[in-house]
Amino acid sequence: MRLSDLPLPDAATRRLARLPFMAPPSPADTNRRVLITGGASGLGLALATAFLERGDRVMIADLAPADERPESIPKDARYVRLDVRSEEEWKAAREEIGEVWGGLDVLVNNAGIAQGGRIEMLTEEDWRQITDINLLGVARGCRTFVPQLKAQGHGLIVNTASLAGLVHPPTMSSYTAVKAAVVAISESLRWELEPFGVTVAVACPSFFRTNLASSLNSSDPAAAGFASKLIDRSERGADEIAAEIVAALDLGEFLILPDPDARKSYRGKRLLPVAYTKTMTEMGRKFAAATGRG
Ligand SMILES: NC(=O)c1ccc[n+]([C@@H]2O[C@H](COP(=O)([O-])OP(=O)(O)OC[C@H]3O[C@@H](n4cnc5c(N)ncnc54)[C@H](O)[C@@H]3O)[C@@H](O)[C@H]2O)c1
Image 1: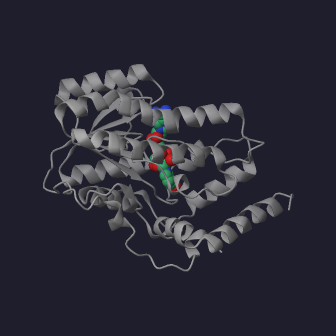
Image 2: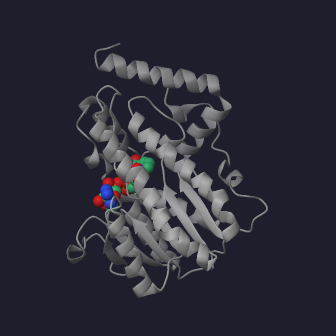
Image 3: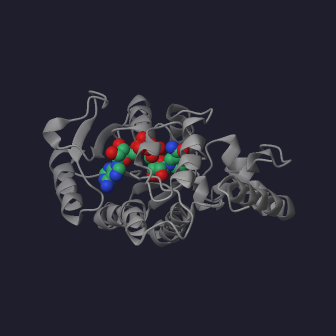
Protein backbone atom coordinates (compact mmCIF):
# COMPACT_ATOMS: atom_id res chain seq x y z
CA MET A 1 0.00 0.00 0.00
CA ARG A 2 1.21 3.51 -0.79
CA LEU A 3 1.20 6.13 1.93
CA SER A 4 -1.39 8.20 0.10
CA ASP A 5 -3.68 5.11 -0.05
CA LEU A 6 -4.21 5.23 3.72
CA PRO A 7 -7.97 5.14 4.33
CA LEU A 8 -8.55 8.85 4.93
CA PRO A 9 -10.60 11.38 2.99
CA ASP A 10 -8.73 14.32 1.48
CA ALA A 11 -10.20 16.71 4.04
CA ALA A 12 -9.38 20.32 4.65
CA THR A 13 -6.12 19.99 6.56
CA ARG A 14 -5.16 23.14 4.68
CA ARG A 15 -7.57 25.54 6.32
CA LEU A 16 -6.35 24.52 9.79
CA ALA A 17 -2.91 25.80 8.91
CA ARG A 18 -3.88 29.48 9.19
CA LEU A 19 -3.86 31.46 12.42
CA PRO A 20 -7.60 32.05 12.90
CA PHE A 21 -7.09 35.40 14.61
CA MET A 22 -5.00 36.92 11.83
CA ALA A 23 -6.39 38.47 8.67
CA PRO A 24 -5.09 36.76 5.52
CA PRO A 25 -3.20 38.95 3.05
CA SER A 26 -5.49 40.55 0.53
CA PRO A 27 -5.46 38.87 -2.92
CA ALA A 28 -5.92 42.40 -4.24
CA ASP A 29 -2.43 43.21 -2.99
CA THR A 30 -0.68 42.84 -6.35
CA ASN A 31 2.39 44.36 -7.92
CA ARG A 32 4.52 42.85 -5.16
CA ARG A 33 8.26 42.49 -5.73
CA VAL A 34 9.05 38.75 -5.69
CA LEU A 35 12.44 37.00 -5.75
CA ILE A 36 12.42 33.25 -6.55
CA THR A 37 15.56 31.12 -6.22
CA GLY A 38 15.94 28.12 -8.52
CA GLY A 39 13.41 29.84 -10.77
CA ALA A 40 14.73 28.75 -14.18
CA SER A 41 13.07 25.33 -14.06
CA GLY A 42 10.34 23.23 -12.49
CA LEU A 43 8.43 24.63 -9.53
CA GLY A 44 10.39 27.90 -9.36
CA LEU A 45 9.55 28.65 -12.98
CA ALA A 46 5.90 27.69 -12.50
CA LEU A 47 5.70 29.92 -9.42
CA ALA A 48 7.24 32.78 -11.39
CA THR A 49 4.54 32.43 -14.03
CA ALA A 50 1.79 32.20 -11.39
CA PHE A 51 3.04 35.32 -9.56
CA LEU A 52 3.26 37.24 -12.86
CA GLU A 53 -0.29 36.19 -13.78
CA ARG A 54 -1.39 37.33 -10.33
CA GLY A 55 -0.03 40.79 -11.12
CA ASP A 56 3.22 40.69 -9.17
CA ARG A 57 6.71 41.60 -10.36
CA VAL A 58 9.21 38.74 -10.46
CA MET A 59 12.97 38.37 -10.35
CA ILE A 60 14.19 34.86 -11.04
CA ALA A 61 17.50 33.71 -9.58
CA ASP A 62 19.38 30.66 -10.81
CA LEU A 63 22.81 29.30 -11.67
CA ALA A 64 23.26 30.53 -15.26
CA PRO A 65 25.39 33.67 -15.63
CA ALA A 66 23.43 36.91 -16.08
CA ASP A 67 24.48 37.23 -19.74
CA GLU A 68 23.26 33.67 -20.43
CA ARG A 69 19.70 34.23 -19.23
CA PRO A 70 17.90 30.86 -19.60
CA GLU A 71 15.38 30.83 -22.46
CA SER A 72 12.80 29.20 -20.20
CA ILE A 73 12.33 32.45 -18.27
CA PRO A 74 9.24 34.52 -19.12
CA LYS A 75 10.13 37.82 -20.81
CA ASP A 76 8.28 39.80 -18.14
CA ALA A 77 10.54 38.46 -15.40
CA ARG A 78 13.92 39.86 -14.45
CA TYR A 79 16.86 37.49 -14.05
CA VAL A 80 19.83 37.47 -11.68
CA ARG A 81 22.60 34.91 -11.30
CA LEU A 82 22.46 33.66 -7.72
CA ASP A 83 24.02 30.45 -6.45
CA VAL A 84 22.33 30.03 -3.07
CA ARG A 85 25.61 28.63 -1.68
CA SER A 86 27.32 32.02 -2.01
CA GLU A 87 26.92 34.77 0.62
CA GLU A 88 28.49 37.23 -1.84
CA GLU A 89 25.95 36.44 -4.55
CA TRP A 90 23.11 36.85 -2.04
CA LYS A 91 24.45 40.29 -1.13
CA ALA A 92 24.86 41.22 -4.80
CA ALA A 93 21.27 40.13 -5.51
CA ARG A 94 20.01 42.27 -2.61
CA GLU A 95 21.90 45.25 -4.00
CA GLU A 96 20.54 44.71 -7.49
CA ILE A 97 17.00 44.43 -6.12
CA GLY A 98 17.55 47.63 -4.14
CA GLU A 99 18.62 49.41 -7.33
CA VAL A 100 15.81 48.21 -9.60
CA TRP A 101 12.91 47.94 -7.15
CA GLY A 102 14.00 49.75 -3.99
CA GLY A 103 13.10 46.67 -1.87
CA LEU A 104 11.47 43.24 -1.78
CA ASP A 105 8.03 42.04 -0.65
CA VAL A 106 8.19 38.27 -1.20
CA LEU A 107 11.24 36.00 -0.91
CA VAL A 108 10.75 32.46 -2.28
CA ASN A 109 13.54 30.12 -1.17
CA ASN A 110 12.90 27.38 -3.70
CA ALA A 111 16.26 26.24 -5.15
CA GLY A 112 17.04 22.64 -4.33
CA ILE A 113 18.48 19.33 -5.47
CA ALA A 114 17.32 15.76 -4.97
CA GLN A 115 19.24 13.01 -3.28
CA GLY A 116 18.51 9.36 -2.60
CA GLY A 117 20.61 6.75 -0.90
CA ARG A 118 20.90 4.10 1.77
CA ILE A 119 22.68 5.59 4.79
CA GLU A 120 25.88 3.56 4.36
CA MET A 121 26.17 4.60 0.71
CA LEU A 122 25.60 8.34 1.01
CA THR A 123 28.99 9.99 1.23
CA GLU A 124 29.98 12.85 3.48
CA GLU A 125 30.27 14.95 0.32
CA ASP A 126 26.63 14.07 -0.55
CA TRP A 127 25.54 15.31 2.90
CA ARG A 128 27.59 18.49 2.62
CA GLN A 129 26.23 19.26 -0.85
CA ILE A 130 22.55 18.85 0.00
CA THR A 131 22.96 20.73 3.27
CA ASP A 132 24.73 23.61 1.53
CA ILE A 133 22.01 24.02 -1.11
CA ASN A 134 18.71 22.82 0.37
CA LEU A 135 19.21 23.95 3.97
CA LEU A 136 21.91 26.64 4.17
CA GLY A 137 20.60 28.14 0.93
CA VAL A 138 17.32 28.86 2.75
CA ALA A 139 19.09 30.18 5.85
CA ARG A 140 21.28 32.48 3.74
CA GLY A 141 18.26 33.84 1.89
CA CYS A 142 16.47 34.61 5.16
CA ARG A 143 19.59 36.16 6.73
CA THR A 144 20.08 38.37 3.68
CA PHE A 145 16.57 39.79 3.47
CA VAL A 146 15.06 39.61 6.98
CA PRO A 147 16.66 42.87 8.25
CA GLN A 148 15.10 44.71 5.29
CA LEU A 149 11.68 43.03 5.69
CA LYS A 150 11.65 43.77 9.43
CA ALA A 151 12.64 47.39 8.84
CA GLN A 152 9.87 47.96 6.29
CA GLY A 153 7.32 46.26 8.60
CA HIS A 154 5.93 43.84 6.03
CA GLY A 155 7.00 40.94 3.85
CA LEU A 156 6.45 37.29 3.09
CA ILE A 157 8.99 34.46 3.10
CA VAL A 158 7.99 31.25 1.30
CA ASN A 159 10.23 28.23 1.73
CA THR A 160 9.92 25.21 -0.54
CA ALA A 161 10.35 22.15 1.68
CA SER A 162 8.68 18.88 0.69
CA LEU A 163 6.26 16.27 2.00
CA ALA A 164 9.55 14.48 2.75
CA GLY A 165 10.12 17.13 5.43
CA LEU A 166 7.01 15.87 7.26
CA VAL A 167 6.96 12.12 6.52
CA HIS A 168 10.29 10.39 6.17
CA PRO A 169 10.44 7.36 3.82
CA PRO A 170 13.36 4.92 3.75
CA THR A 171 16.49 5.46 1.57
CA MET A 172 16.07 9.25 1.56
CA SER A 173 17.66 10.23 4.88
CA SER A 174 19.76 13.18 3.69
CA TYR A 175 16.85 14.67 1.72
CA THR A 176 14.29 14.14 4.50
CA ALA A 177 16.72 15.59 7.08
CA VAL A 178 17.29 18.87 5.26
CA LYS A 179 13.64 19.27 4.28
CA ALA A 180 12.54 18.63 7.89
CA ALA A 181 15.01 21.35 8.86
CA VAL A 182 13.42 23.73 6.34
CA VAL A 183 10.02 23.08 7.95
CA ALA A 184 11.60 23.78 11.35
CA ILE A 185 13.29 27.03 10.24
CA SER A 186 10.00 28.16 8.76
CA GLU A 187 8.07 27.58 11.97
CA SER A 188 10.71 29.30 14.13
CA LEU A 189 10.74 32.30 11.84
CA ARG A 190 6.96 32.36 11.75
CA TRP A 191 6.83 33.17 15.46
CA GLU A 192 10.03 35.27 15.42
CA LEU A 193 8.96 37.57 12.60
CA GLU A 194 5.22 37.87 13.29
CA PRO A 195 5.76 40.86 15.65
CA PHE A 196 7.46 42.66 12.76
CA GLY A 197 4.64 42.15 10.26
CA VAL A 198 6.62 39.55 8.29
CA THR A 199 4.78 36.31 7.49
CA VAL A 200 6.28 32.93 6.67
CA ALA A 201 4.92 29.95 4.75
CA VAL A 202 6.35 26.55 3.93
CA ALA A 203 5.29 24.44 0.95
CA CYS A 204 5.36 20.65 1.35
CA PRO A 205 4.36 19.03 -1.95
CA SER A 206 4.51 15.34 -2.71
CA PHE A 207 6.35 14.25 -5.89
CA PHE A 208 5.61 16.12 -9.13
CA ARG A 209 7.23 16.10 -12.59
CA THR A 210 10.22 18.47 -13.04
CA ASN A 211 13.92 18.28 -13.88
CA LEU A 212 14.68 17.47 -10.24
CA ALA A 213 15.68 13.85 -10.95
CA SER A 214 18.58 15.10 -13.09
CA SER A 215 20.23 16.42 -9.90
CA LEU A 216 20.20 12.98 -8.22
CA ASN A 217 23.55 11.74 -6.94
CA SER A 218 25.10 8.46 -8.04
CA SER A 219 26.34 7.16 -4.69
CA ASP A 220 23.48 4.65 -4.51
CA PRO A 221 22.01 4.13 -8.00
CA ALA A 222 19.23 1.81 -6.76
CA ALA A 223 17.88 4.38 -4.30
CA ALA A 224 18.37 7.27 -6.72
CA GLY A 225 16.47 5.26 -9.37
CA PHE A 226 13.61 4.73 -6.91
CA ALA A 227 13.37 8.50 -6.22
CA SER A 228 13.72 9.31 -9.91
CA LYS A 229 10.75 7.08 -10.82
CA LEU A 230 8.57 8.75 -8.18
CA ILE A 231 9.33 12.18 -9.66
CA ASP A 232 9.11 11.26 -13.35
CA ARG A 233 5.96 9.12 -13.02
CA SER A 234 4.00 11.53 -10.85
CA GLU A 235 0.56 12.39 -12.19
CA ARG A 236 1.14 16.07 -11.29
CA GLY A 237 3.12 18.81 -13.00
CA ALA A 238 4.75 21.89 -11.49
CA ASP A 239 2.03 24.27 -12.78
CA GLU A 240 -0.68 22.61 -10.67
CA ILE A 241 1.49 22.70 -7.57
CA ALA A 242 2.43 26.36 -8.13
CA ALA A 243 -1.21 27.38 -8.62
CA GLU A 244 -2.15 25.71 -5.32
CA ILE A 245 0.74 27.35 -3.49
CA VAL A 246 -0.04 30.86 -4.75
CA ALA A 247 -3.74 30.40 -3.86
CA ALA A 248 -2.80 29.12 -0.39
CA LEU A 249 -0.53 32.13 0.15
CA ASP A 250 -3.46 34.41 -0.63
CA LEU A 251 -5.41 32.59 2.09
CA GLY A 252 -2.59 33.25 4.56
CA GLU A 253 -1.73 29.56 5.07
CA PHE A 254 1.47 28.62 6.84
CA LEU A 255 1.81 24.89 6.13
CA ILE A 256 0.94 24.42 2.48
CA LEU A 257 0.12 20.86 1.41
CA PRO A 258 -0.65 21.57 -2.25
CA ASP A 259 -1.77 18.15 -3.47
CA PRO A 260 -4.02 15.31 -2.24
CA ASP A 261 -1.14 12.85 -1.74
CA ALA A 262 0.66 15.30 0.54
CA ARG A 263 -2.50 16.04 2.53
CA LYS A 264 -3.45 12.38 2.95
CA SER A 265 0.06 11.20 3.80
CA TYR A 266 0.57 13.88 6.44
CA ARG A 267 -2.83 13.25 7.99
CA GLY A 268 -2.19 9.49 7.87
CA LYS A 269 0.98 9.89 9.89
CA ARG A 270 -0.77 11.95 12.55
CA LEU A 271 -4.15 10.20 12.69
CA LEU A 272 -3.46 6.56 11.74
CA PRO A 273 -0.12 5.70 13.37
CA VAL A 274 -0.56 1.93 13.07
CA ALA A 275 -1.41 2.01 9.36
CA TYR A 276 1.38 4.53 8.79
CA THR A 277 3.96 2.35 10.54
CA LYS A 278 2.81 -0.71 8.59
CA THR A 279 3.05 1.13 5.26
CA MET A 280 6.50 2.53 5.94
CA THR A 281 7.76 -0.84 7.21
CA GLU A 282 6.52 -2.48 4.01
CA MET A 283 8.25 0.19 1.95
CA GLY A 284 11.58 -0.44 3.68
CA ARG A 285 11.24 -4.23 3.34
CA LYS A 286 10.27 -3.98 -0.33
CA PHE A 287 13.32 -1.89 -1.11
CA ALA A 288 15.61 -4.23 0.86
CA ALA A 289 14.17 -7.26 -0.98
CA ALA A 290 14.53 -5.57 -4.38
CA THR A 291 18.16 -4.74 -3.71
CA GLY A 292 19.04 -8.24 -2.56
CA ARG A 293 19.08 -7.71 1.17
CA GLY A 294 15.57 -8.81 2.06
N1 LIG B 1 9.84 17.72 -8.01
C1 LIG B 1 9.43 17.17 -6.88
O1 LIG B 1 8.91 16.04 -6.86
C2 LIG B 1 9.55 17.93 -5.58
C3 LIG B 1 8.78 17.50 -4.49
C4 LIG B 1 8.89 18.21 -3.29
C5 LIG B 1 9.72 19.32 -3.19
N2 LIG B 1 10.46 19.69 -4.29
C6 LIG B 1 11.35 20.84 -4.12
O2 LIG B 1 10.99 21.82 -5.09
C7 LIG B 1 12.12 22.69 -5.29
C8 LIG B 1 12.29 22.92 -6.78
O3 LIG B 1 12.65 21.70 -7.39
P1 LIG B 1 12.09 21.25 -8.83
O4 LIG B 1 11.40 19.96 -8.62
O5 LIG B 1 11.40 22.36 -9.48
O6 LIG B 1 13.47 20.88 -9.55
P2 LIG B 1 14.20 21.49 -10.83
O7 LIG B 1 15.49 20.73 -10.90
O8 LIG B 1 13.30 21.46 -12.02
O9 LIG B 1 14.48 23.00 -10.42
C9 LIG B 1 15.45 23.33 -9.44
C10 LIG B 1 16.13 24.62 -9.84
O10 LIG B 1 17.07 24.96 -8.80
C11 LIG B 1 18.27 25.40 -9.42
N3 LIG B 1 19.40 25.23 -8.50
C12 LIG B 1 20.00 24.08 -8.13
N4 LIG B 1 21.05 24.36 -7.32
C13 LIG B 1 21.06 25.70 -7.17
C14 LIG B 1 21.90 26.60 -6.45
N5 LIG B 1 22.96 26.16 -5.75
N6 LIG B 1 21.64 27.92 -6.50
C15 LIG B 1 20.60 28.39 -7.25
N7 LIG B 1 19.78 27.60 -7.96
C16 LIG B 1 20.02 26.26 -7.91
C17 LIG B 1 18.39 24.54 -10.66
O11 LIG B 1 19.28 25.14 -11.62
C18 LIG B 1 16.96 24.49 -11.13
O12 LIG B 1 16.64 25.56 -12.01
C19 LIG B 1 13.32 22.00 -4.63
O13 LIG B 1 13.59 22.62 -3.39
C20 LIG B 1 12.82 20.58 -4.41
O14 LIG B 1 13.47 19.94 -3.33
C21 LIG B 1 10.38 19.04 -5.48
